[in-house]
Length: 186
Image 1: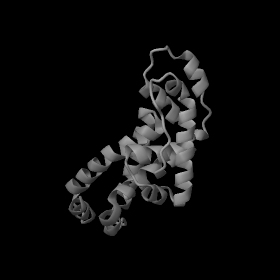
Image 2: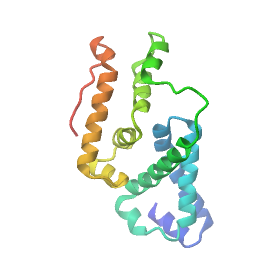
Image 3: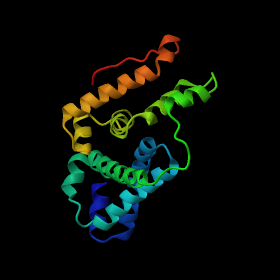
Image 4: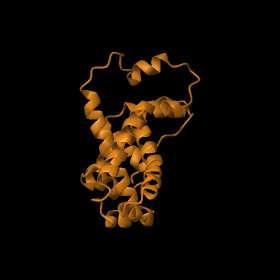
């Protein structure tokens, strides 16, 4: 991967294309889990890829050598934050579904996974990012702190609160015996 990037920095268009293609998959996966919408994930991915394309000569190889995954996640998380800021300026014409209104509308046989996914998307943006980076991208607490530019203790607190909120929202599964949700300290 580093060799491919170095060739791209040297002006090899084919290497740049291959490097961007590799990043596209990683970026899209994170963006989709964070934004919940395919179009938003594609927009954030494109925004991050354009940034890499425009700044390929300025990116330090040492950033990739040491912590490539953290570097990649930092780029896509920033693109998602930027997209979220842009979109928050636009008033939605559709009513926003909250967790409570959604639960009332769901049929009784909806799977736990669907309920969990909905609950995660109902979390505020920062805790949702932290959950995605921790459990989908498998970053450590320290790597998440680096990606988001916040202290490690803040990551731990927000992760704990997010899991506690999910536990509360998904208590029907726990009480019904369908799933035992537990909070584990990381």
